[in-house]
Image (cartoon, rainbow, N blue to C red):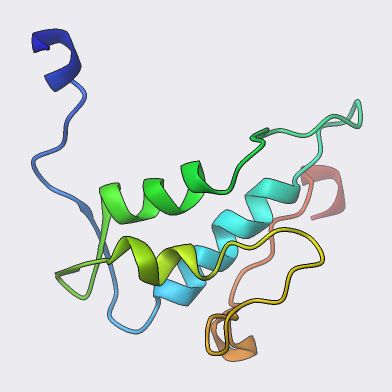
Length: 102
C-alpha cells in the first residue's frame, strides 16, 4: 500500500472554467494518434481509462469532475453520445497533428 500511495496526488491539474470540453477533445484526439509505423500511440480496449484519468487527476474551475459527467463523452465507435455530451465546435481549440505535417 505504501508504494501505491507514492503515486497519489495531493493537488489536481486545474482546467480553466468552461474548458473541460477542450481537455476532453484533446484526450479524444490522443486516442486516434498513429505512430509513423501505423500503430496507435495509445491502446485500450475500454474507454474507462480515459474518463477515469480526467476525473481523478483534473478539476474543472476548482471543482471535482464527476465521473459520470466525463464518461458521457467517451462512447464507442458507432455509438451515439448522450445528448449534450459532444464537444462543441467552439471548444475544439487545438488540433494534434504529426510534427512533419505542422
